Length: 404
Image 1: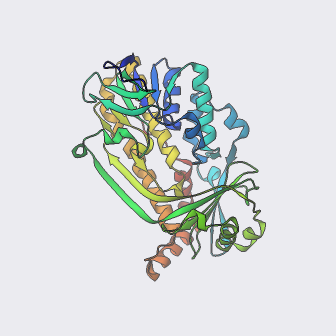
Image 2: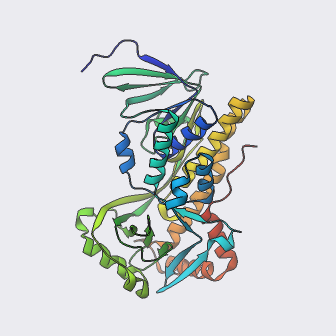
Image 3: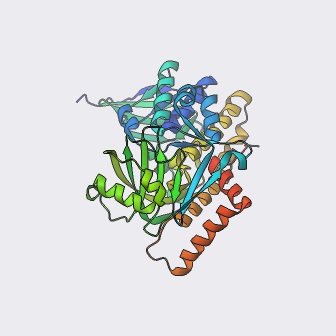
């Protein structure tokens, strides 16, 4: 290995972005289109980033933001607009008409992998710099006017001087860990179960997503396209993927769905199976000096409400508009408003995801009273226009918060 040079190679940019997932790439693309220079640094390879199977339901606001970023062409051609979603319980299905209840808003089913791929291609086309497989990424001097990040690659040390740092590197990334513990407060709830997910090249059992509550546990019927399905089962945290054969998964899914839905289910070999734990997590504030936390670096939601990727897009929208104001109008006074602006929307999404999770899952320590409360909640929501409207406006996504 080449020995480290004593003086790192130096580069300069306006915004250094840590993390080349969809939030980092989307922020970079939006800034690039406004002439704001940025460099993205990612510790994994581009292939690894694309291999991560994640969310697939995009809120109206994120769809609009992808249009603004100039990366919506393939989404519009291949994505599946959904004007409704279904709740299944007591062996019946209730459709929530999102479009009618929200005055025309819908959601788009388009996989996070595809969003990431589109953003990567756009960045390549624009000539933006993305550094993959960067080791030991570290931000420095975040409370000064001259922050910088350092990293290693191929045995050499590098330094990027910048005006601002965007921490888009996820829950386990370095950005949040760079903030002194006494400067932030953490709010967290860990749920006593996980989701076992299966991806298969089979037609979806329904044209719209089905969220199912059953005494054996929650189930979700989702999709990535008209020929690729994504299904989830609530499982205990001590379950192991290798103990779940394809046959066992499909049989358990059928048990948790209404009988007519189970009869229509097309099964097939799994392309991928994995178990994800569920947690609610928020850190306050989301900024430290000139470091801004974005997406999973600052908050996690259980996937029940389809909010994880969408909340990251909301943060990107706020930071993007803030930086445009800074560079185009000299509005540095807005910098301190980033965290409070983001958190207003984040806590509402956390509430919705917590509510959905609490209403639709079974809890091992649940007593008969709580079970009756879940049943009453579902019965009310499904029979009340006000209840359905509340569900719909949260599901399609609340409006983005304004900085002013």
